[in-house]
Image (tube, rainbow, N blue to C red; front, top):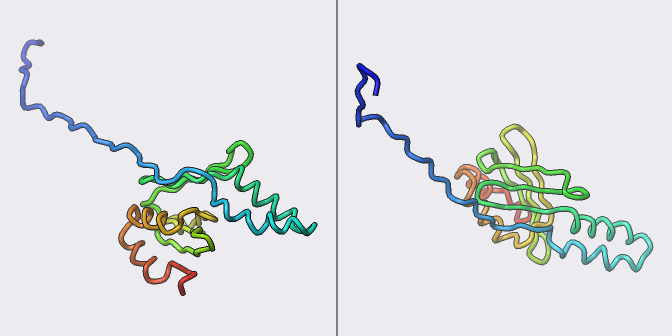
Length: 150
C-alpha cells in the first residue's frame, strides 16, 4: 500500500466476454451431383473438358458454413480463400438445381458478390443461413430471392 491511497471495494469489475463455440453446419466440397452429366458426356470427345472441370471443383473447392461465417476455399492446395460474415449480407438470391442442390449469391454491404455453386442439402442450408442473417435480408429473400421459384 502506498501512503495516502485507500483500497476501495467498489472498483468496477470487468465482466468476461462470453463467446460460444462456433457451430459448423457444413464443411466439405460442392455436391457430387454436379459431376453426373459431365461424366456421362465423356462418351463424346467434347465431354472430356466439362468432366475434368467438374471433378477439379470436387477436388479443390471446399465450403465451410458456420453460425458466424461462410468460407470458400479453392485452388490447388486451398491457396485461395474468400470469407463473409452474416452482418455484411444485404441480399441473397438462389436457384435450386436437381437432386436437392442449389446455387447461392450473397450481395454484400460493400457492393461485392459472393457466389456458391452446387451447395449440397440446399433447403436445409438455406434454412440455416436465413436464421443467421438480418430479418430484412430474410424478408427480401422471401419476397423474391429464390429465382428458380418465380
